Image (cartoon, rainbow, N blue to C red; front, side, top):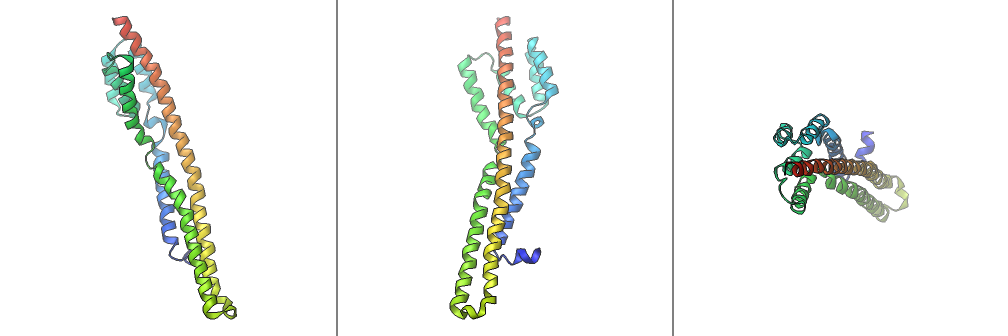
Length: 205
């Protein structure tokens, strides 16, 4: 196996680097794109009860007890609840855009790896075929055995590039869907909590 990889030439080094980077990013994102990293169901239930009773200070304390994305957004909504709807919505949208960067962290790098890995394989193919033609021009068809190195390099680098790119694309798409799912749930929950906050403001007024 190792001998097969080595016969692909030095182009296998950047392809292997792409593979390691894709694995590292995939593991990091799979660990950190869990719903519990952004929303705590137990605290959410307690927040709902506090806001139903109009206990804004208790709700703020709950938000600050666990420094995760949704709690930070809700903390902003509670602190600036006196703003009108348009201003508060704009404030939350601005903060959401900043927070959302973490959801998409490294996904651009993963997409780049999926793009360049097959290109590196193609480049290795071109380099291998150049060696083949150089051998043909120097030694002719009588030394066909010498052509095997260039052909092998061409085929192995192409296969390696594809083997890195295909699963990387699949993982990237899956992680994008997971990030979108997290964001959608947070948006739905924020709408619910904003209605509770507005209702308590009307009651207290």
